[in-house]
Length: 269
Length: 347
Image 1 (tube, rainbow over the protein chains, first blue to last red):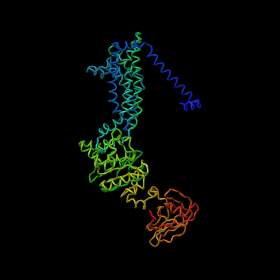
Image 2 (image 1 turned 45 degrees about the vertical axis):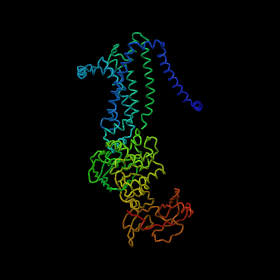
Image 3 (image 1 turned 135 degrees about the horizontal axis):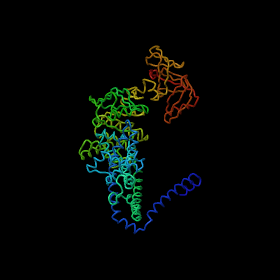
């Protein structure tokens, strides 16, 4: 500690920038604590036991896990292709795949609502029993659409960091290109995959705007934790809203810790 | 054994242009060239990683140009090993056998024999990240050898190693080659490696093969200025050659040197620094070139000292440390440079 403080005294820039970082950190901490300590522990436990919060937890977990799996299944090949191959229109495709990241979730939700609610494709899917509008499937689709770029970007960067010569060597040893990918590149990308899955799941469980537009906010039907927070705040049931908020904070913090752990190793190889 | 005919491949920054090579069975073939010469892309094209734009690759009389890497039976070892980091040494070496569906017990036995041969059997349960550079390179060689390839391609396998490890691994490669009689194509920057390991060698530059031949022949008889400069021939001159009494007399900036090469007109003349005898007094010898000059610069390389001498021409000669110390040479010292007409190469 001593040498750090000695150096800080010598530099005004360090003092100013460090103060900014500390103020920001204290502000965030106070904000999180103000939510968690707004109610008593017993009230919080009671709210957690309510059927509505339990439904919201279940709905959030199921939809976020499904959407995360969908993100993995789609992003792994897409990220690999864009990390390994050079082709006409690659930059444009990269930009399009990143676009949902920059899009306001509400706009993404409107897009999904129009696509699945008004087009013949969406209507056709609904007739086949796969309705997205105002259903839990809509929540999954909203989470997938908004959060896929997180998984895609992390995986693309992970694959770019893996020397293709590992696959070349595997192929000279008798592996097909698919075997080389499956047995060499994918295991080497496991930390990137884990980091991507954690951040995607964490973002999925907290997804609100797009899910609200596509699936609506129907109590005990399309009620995820953020929707529950919104509904209970709207009708003034603060303990239930705080319970949903606290769970989301805990999930976010744990996810952040796990993400840091895995992303730190994501490009080791 | 393996023949490369007019191979061309354009990858933008790196390319091959009409590369032709013939490597016989059991030969240790060295490819030397500067960075960006196309050496690695040549190996990768032979291995089947890239499909050539034109040309063909014939292995044991069979055209393998269109075959995928897995069907060529050509082993590849990279400079940076490329050991699979999530597999331990045994699993790395077994990889080729497992893809060929060799039963696990047989694979284990083959790995045991090979690791013993390469003296890495004690590393079998270690992961690549815990191995030294030399150990990793031995494992990479074992992994390539386990499938008994027809040809082993080595892409600068020694360049990332320290001098001691490099020496040991070089001996290992010699032992491997002499005891297995495997055909090896080895890419390198090092002339020393080419001399010590190669039966034949090729010099590459800008995607082309510039010269091929036995290492001694290429070193003493470069066919162009690039090869001479690349091989570190310190004495390379342009002059006018005329034939006289069966010898070529080359006039270089007014200074005349004799060569046994029968070449007239404008020529390049090269003399290797180690072929020049340095003395304080004229030597009584059969060598037909003797130039007097003054030491301009001393380049002390430890065991070998190179001196730059102004003898009408600026020439570089190499001496052992012992000779240099005995002659007490300093900048400005007067010296005689003596070299045979047979050591003056004209092209």
